[in-house]
Image 1 (spheres, rainbow over the protein chains, first blue to last red):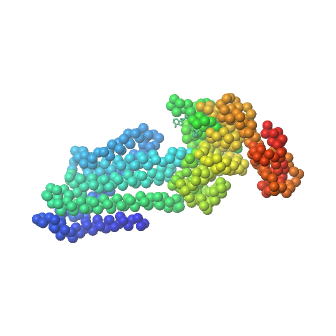
Image 2: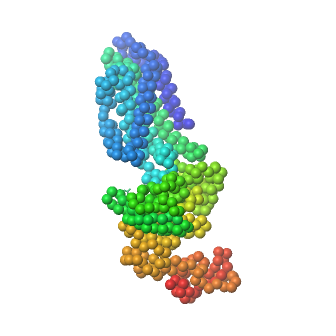
Image 3: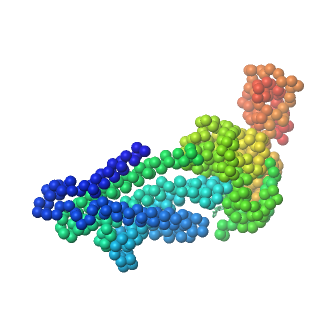
Length: 248
Length: 315
Ligand SMILES: Nc1ncnc2c1ncn2[C@@H]1O[C@H](COP(=O)(O)OP(=O)(O)OP(=O)(O)O)[C@@H](O)[C@H]1O
Ligand SMILES: [Mg+2]
């Protein structure tokens, strides 16, 4: 449990900044002397944060479910034909800039939350898919041969052997995907989604550096919190397996 | 009993196994031996249906394996492979318990069985039950692999180079254990190896394979005495055949027994009943002895073996 202290501390910092940004008013006033509006007021930071997290959470869940299923499908006997295609897509997709994905989503879905969500799902799929493939592929063939040769059903092999063994790598993929998407979601503000990118965009448009910094601060804190949460999860992964082995 | 009739296996255009016929009687150890790539593993995998056979018929106890539910078939066949295939995320105990668990045994019965097996294979349960595979040496892992194959007391054992990649001493120990266990449990076993000495030592009958065909299927003795062709002769190493033959014989079968066990002479070197004549010969050569006393497990002298008896016994 001690590994979860760090993410908790970061979370507290994040919530504090989102709730009480005005305590830093003097600070923002100090390097922007002429500015009348020092703190972003158009929407509460907490509600922006909530919306931002929701977008990432929903897209992350959909993306993980889709990518892991796809990864599983193409590594089964009957889906193997698609394996080269899937791994190619997974690695090419990484070189595609997130903004481009976002821009491509607009003509299809218009402005607002929906295209942002779609872009996030699409962009988040790829690291998870790639890691699912790497993870499943990295399991020693002898282990799988033994598993089915001893009489485990394909489902048992998948659930009891393959996924637990690939889990760490898949989790690392989810971590990458979610961390990238926290940043990508902010760009969603340019196409009308309400996210922590709002103050950044407003600041850039109005020449108000304070707004930009406030948005950036919160996005940064959110990214760090999430990342350290995943770090903690990955660390406990092997211990969790140990516990499962003892209990089972 | 396992029967293969005209069984072939093709991968695309390559024929890995070419119309082989093989019968493994109940309780016998059939060793498949041959050079790398000759189709030994493929044959084994067809028996537990990890690979489908392209032609021919495989039956177990008279039943076509394609008619048997595949899981039922496999649960009744212990399977041990080179590289062990132990599950790295499970403890030794849980690995061994795999098949009993799949069969739905009670927890108590599983625990008892796992302890029994680990003990049988010389792994103290207190020390090893809760270790993970990565914490084991190669030889220990191989033992766990064998224990796992034996766990649910299957009628049939399939072993694919279970002692490969081990040093000579560990290998020797495991072979001894395997012989000891086999004397107790009498499993119908198909054992794959590319080591002819291992084959001669463990087999009831040996099937020599080359390029997907069985060249000769006979007892170790008959194979040594009359190899079917040059390939088999070469595999046996023609100059070593005499010694290999003597390695098949036990001292206990060639010696002359005392009417009563007597006090051993502590000065001289000695043999035990289960030593092979080959070992006896080596000891005699070393000591330049005409004969050597034979002791039983308790240390009492039960007979003597002379040089002449080796000569008559080995041929
Ligand atoms: N899944 C497969 N796809 C294609 N060819 C295969 C496959 N499995 C085996 N083969 C081929 O079939 C032949 C026999 O292979 P097999 O694994 O049975 O050899 P082996 O006798 O067990 O050899 P080794 O002692 O090296 O394990 C080889 O030529 C191999 O290349
Ligand atoms: Mg092989």
